[in-house]
Length: 382
Ligand SMILES: Cc1ncc(COP(=O)(O)O)c(C=O)c1O
Image (cartoon, rainbow, N blue to C red; front, side, top):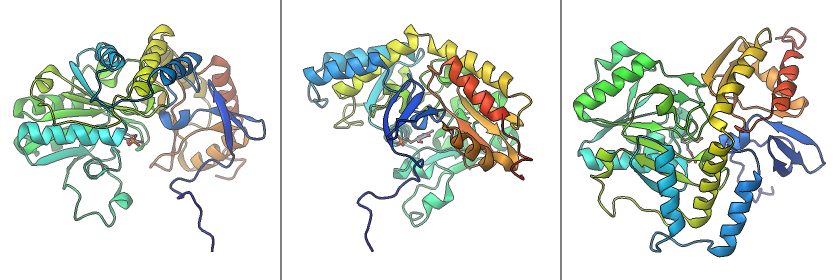
C-alpha cells in the first residue's frame, strides 16, 4: 500500500487550485470558482489584493525576517496601527495562529489571576493546541487526550440563569467567540453577554473574546466587541489579520497590559516583518475601501436576496452568515459546488456557512443568489 506523502488532514475541494484574485479561485483547468468560503475565512481583502501583494513583495526584498531580538520599525508601526484599529485595546502581542493566540491569552489569564480554572461556552471552537483544545467543544478532537486536557467549565449557550450557578471567583478567564462560527454562526444574545461581562468584572475574571473569525471588519465593525459594545480584557486574532500571511495577535486592555512582565509571552516568528507588512496593507485596504461598511451592506443584500429561497433562516452577522437549510443543506452545498460556488459546512448539519472576502462584488452576490434560488429541495428529493 502506498502512503500519501501529505497527511490527509482535511477533505479538500475536489479540484486543484492554481491561482486566485478577488472573489475567485482559478483551477488548473482554467475554470473560475466563486469563493464564499473565503479561503477558510482568511481572505479578508480578497485573494491577492494588489496592495497587499505589493507590500509583501517590497518587504520580502528588504528584510524577510528577524525575530523580536531585532528592533524593527515595521513591527512597532504594525502594533500602533492595530491598537488604533482595535479602539479600546492598549497593547498587542504578535504570534502566528489562532490557536497560539488563544493559548497565549489563556496562559496569561492563569498567570495574572493566580487561579486554576478556565471556562468556555458550549459550541465554541478555539484551536488544537492543548489549552485551546480544552476550551473547544468538539468531543472527537479530545479523544485520547483527556488526561492532559484542562478540565474547562462549559457554560451553556445563552443561558442567563445558568450564569448564576457559576463560581466566577475560581475562574481565571472565560473565553468565547462572539459569533460561534463552527456551531453554525450562532450569535450570543446581548443580554447574556452583558451579564457575563458584569459577573467577570465583579469577580476579577478576565473575559477573552476569540475574534479569530469575527475580527478585522467581518461583522461590519473593526471587531465584534465594537459591534456588541461589550469590552473584553483580551481579544485574540488570526485568519483575516494579514490577508493570508500567517499571523496571530493577542490584544489586551490597559489593565492587563500593565501587569504583563517581559518573558511571559514570546514566539520566534510572531510579528515577523513579512506578516507585519501584510497586516499593515490589510488594515489600509479595510479602511481605504471602507470594508466594514461594505460587510454590513452585503449582509443586508444577502439577507434580502435569500428571502423566498430554500434558506429558512439566516444566522450570524455581517459576512459571517449561517444559512439554515434544514435537511437540504448538503444538497444545496452540492448544487452550489456544481455551479462552481464554494461555501462551508458547520457542526450543525442543517447550516451552511458563508465567510466570503469583505471585497465581495455585487456581481458575485447576484450570481450566488441566482444559484440559491435555482435550487429546489423537492427536485432533489429532500
Ligand atoms: C474561532 C476560532 N478560533 C481559533 C481557531 C484556530 O486558529 P488556527 O487554525 O489559526 O490555529 C479557529 C480556526 O478555525 C477559529 O475558527
